[in-house]
Image (cartoon, rainbow, N blue to C red; front, side, top):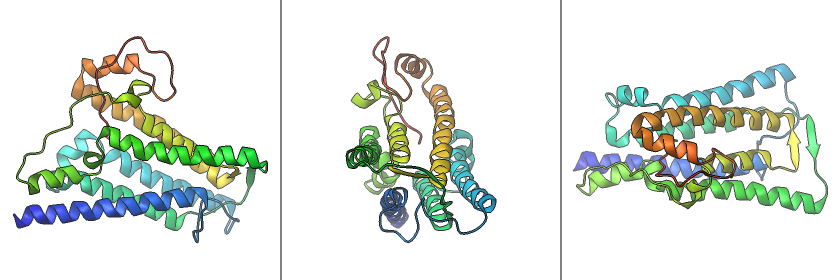
Length: 253
């Protein structure tokens, strides 16, 4: 019982750290009242700054992708107990982001600066909609399973963990990855785009496109023809016409 309680406290702690990191990320990308943000004056050489920023983005991308792969999980759970594997992934992702926030170097080169009040309001609304989409979509998937709480809560209650069934809640019948679409809105919709922000937006967009391919390969391996048909029927990121209704969705984000 003590072991299960310890796992739950660990999972809850990882979740709280994630929530703080998520809120910090909104302020960091939007430039809202933090000591550091994506945008700002150049502090060191341009080449050195870009090298540091790209390295930080690479650390996050590698952590986020490698730890989510099935082959890694199979080996990792021989070291980390399975009930806290997801919580550990969430913790490592949060730490990778916090490292990026801490060490990020602004560049100071202006790409665009929208001054029109109506246009600025539209961009900020889309920025907020992006982050809101990300958060709301986690509940459609199963928020507590996605962030590791369900994996530690069920054993605490003496119940075995069961995987979430393959399904398609409403947004996932429009596009396969609405959560990723929300991130892209959040990263691109800004009235003040600097070179550092552009590098961040380009790198994260590229990562999202690669991550989708890796994630869907795992989902096909797990669900086979069911997911293949879903992938053929529903667009990836942008809404469009679908050939027929799909069977289900599950995320390994």
